[in-house]
Structures are given as C-alpha cells and as structure tokens.
Length: 173
Image (cartoon, rainbow, N blue to C red; front, side):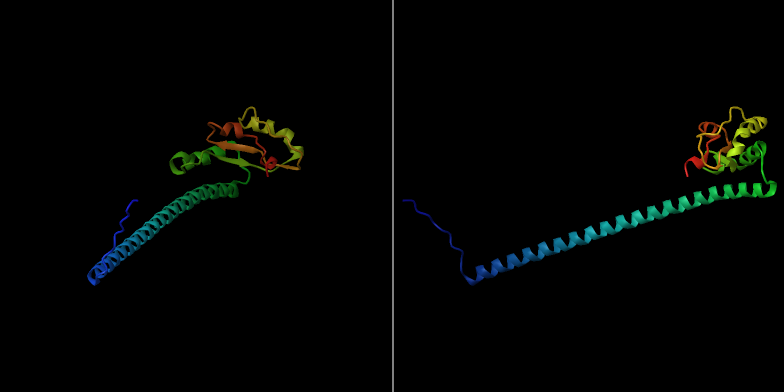
C-alpha cells in the first residue's frame, strides 16, 4: 500500500494571522489595481469622445463655411438676374469668371443656369443657343412633362460641364 501524506497547515494563531494579513493585502492590491484600470479606461473613453466631438465640430464648421461661400455665389447670380432679367451666355460667362471659382470656391467645379422651358418651346431652343455661340446643343433626356429645365449655360466649360449642357433637370425631380 501506498502511504499518502497530507500536509497540515499550521493552526497556530501566528500562522492564521499571517495568512489573513497576506490575503487582505492581496485583495486590497487587486481591488486598487482594478479600480485604477477602470479609471484609466474611463479617462481613455472620455478623451476619445472629446477628440471625436472636437473633430466633428471642426468639420461641421468647415462645411458650414463652405456652404456659406457657395450660397454667396448663388446669391450673386440671383442679383445678376434681378438686375438684368434674362441673361445671355456672355453675361453668365463674365459673371462666373469674375467669381474666380477655382481660387475662391474650393470644390465648386462650375455654375450653371437652367431656365424653365415649355414643351412647345423646346424645338427652337437649340437654334437660339447656336445664335449665342453654343454648337451642338440638345435637350436630354426627352421627357413628356409640360415643363422642362434644361441646362442653358455652365462655366467654366471644361471636363463634364460641357456634357451637362442641355440636361433637363425636370427628368430627375
């Protein structure tokens, strides 16, 4: 037979007291560590949230400023219409050139005008646009609605801007 020896813990008051103190120190240390970790985690979350909110506010302010600039350009166009009534290609080009879009209005590629045109007036529109120096003008897409809003002028005329002339914005309400 095999003899199994069991260790017996010392039952003396000094040993019990020593074990109690050791366990108490361990529990207090673990508790303090857990509390410190929890506070550090809360600080990190708070700091991340503050950084995020600050960035959102900064982007929101920049967006509001840019939209304000675009609005200013559109109000200037409205003033041009108020002063002249219906304007022509040359007047629109001169107005948009004076705005210096690329230098003053970052992200704004071009500005365009679309007048309301009745269906029975669509046939004569390409001819009047040719008279103003715009060749190959056509209204597209063809729709059956009573009113059309084709892009008449758009400047600067580079890239996609020239392809957008004649686009009937009423086709995509």
